[in-house]
Length: 444
Ligand code: SF4
Image (cartoon, rainbow, N blue to C red):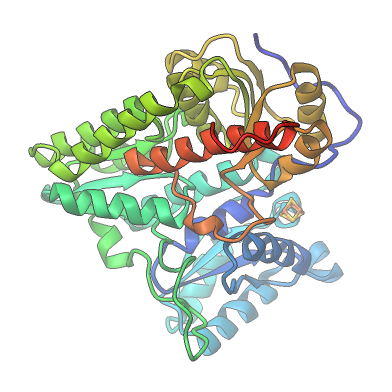
């Protein structure tokens, strides 16, 4: 069954954040990059606050600080001042410029301004621009539009190389580190982009580094147009940022769902092994074996339990498919994004019967949770008020997770990420049953 989000006079407890936030996240996967938000200070502050509370890392996000006059006459001089200040204070390799609703609403010719700036002062850092009006989409769209803009502006064609591009989407730093580990084990050179595995989950340093180490360099990314193929994760992407490499440089695009669950991980790792012309390493086979064994051990605790999933559309679809794979019944799959493709993506993953809610806020999701009464919710911290009031246990996944620490270290992907998730799902259900029990069994 598919339900449209109910018509409501206003969004209450939003389930989406703004498109420039997705852009900033993607820019943090580029080496030596400082994100610059073209618009008012408040937008950059909001983005910083959200990202810091999730990743718990320093988050320098510059702003062109629009005032009343720049709102009327345009932000040309603000942009010039901001880029000059960034050059002098940060010495970045690249400035990632994304626009706010305000800059887009006044029709700012940001691309033209950048062209004029670069022509007038060759000492300025390279500027990469993406238009991210939030009235056209949320962080999910902002992220993928930024990945596409970067690839469009940086990748170059040429002789084919034995390497692949992997576009993993807005996953966690732990997920990115795991993918790098898998690629190394398979022996496949890869451009994993964006890679914020170090920039957003780095070590404690004696001295503050304004631009954290890590990320993919422009020189490396330039070779993305010469890869054997692009493997892109995301069921609802149509066609997604990897298509630009196919259009411009003839790099074939392989589209897969996020590798959560045995079947989805099998498909993803088989695609990587195919690209490498190699067999899967023993270490992955062992992880798979342990995961299947855990499914056998834990199936009696999860079978036929009803679950609701809330999150970014690709993550929500992948989690619902995982839940169905372990014998749970997905009853609600909800997202603040409005892709119009979640129902179809779920059907392609073999998930039937779940209510699909796109463009939803947490109030409307809470109302459906109250009506459907699932046994468990998989979702971000924003799902906590509703699940608390309904006494439904919550397994925190996705973004944002800002009522726990370690969000950057939540592993969702591959056999190993699925193992962690499966254990947490089972243990959360067991813990909840124990909490409600008058007997207090210690043996379950
Ligand atoms: S005005 Fe637009 S860009 Fe700024 S914080 Fe709000 S949604 Fe984001």
